[in-house]
Amino acid sequence: MGFWRVILTIIMPPLGVLIGKGLGWAFIINIILTLCGYLPGLIHGFWVQTRNA
Image (cartoon, rainbow, N blue to C red; front, side):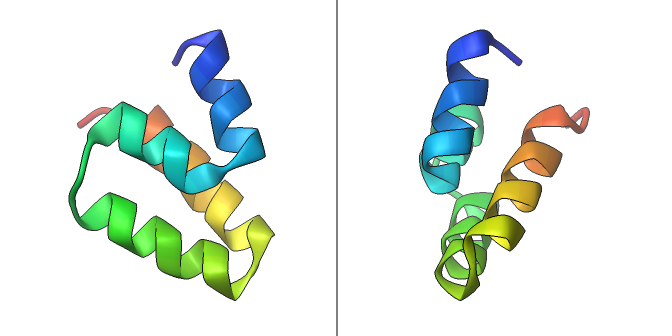
C-alpha cells in the first residue's frame, strides 16, 4: 500500500478503494459504509487495501 493510497483513503475512503481494487463489490460496499458514517468507510477501506487478494 503506497503513501498516496493511504492519504486518499484517509481523505475519501471510496476513492482509495477504487484506485486500489477498481470497480466492484468492495467499492460499492465502501460507498454504502461511508454514507452510513465516515469511520465504517475508513475501516473498510483500509481492510480492503491491506488484505491479500
